[in-house]
Image (cartoon, rainbow, N blue to C red; front, side, top):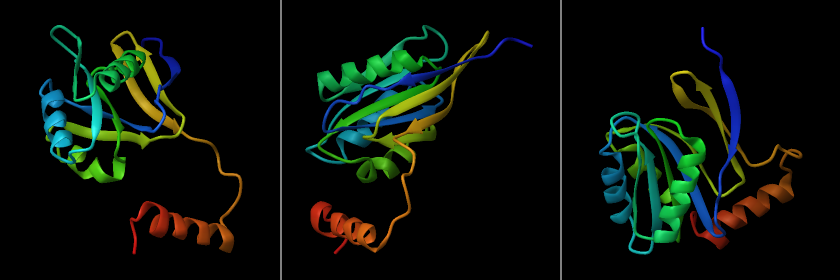
Length: 164
């Protein structure tokens, strides 16, 4: 049995951006994620990085915003787990693109989609590295009361416009 090392890799999320971290299974992931994102919205800016698990084992990258591509690559290098991918988006929200991402044939799982502080929990063995979970944001500080429910409903209906 090999020794297992655990680490928590803190993700870099630029201001006004969100990050999506997931697992896929094929080098074609970068191109298919690009197509899913670029056709989702004309205003969405994004960068994609994918950790190739075999052959040359490179971080493959693409996107329509070079700064976001570079950010995605830095995050992917921190995770360094085979077949993992990182998407950094601006001018859009994960809720608007999650179904498109999950519909990409190579995508096996999405671990996180957030603008909160995010840590990726990584296990490392003699065989490589893998994502075992995430820490997304802070712990609860209480339970929603009527005032909190009113605030949430106002946010969804009047600020964001998701509900009418």
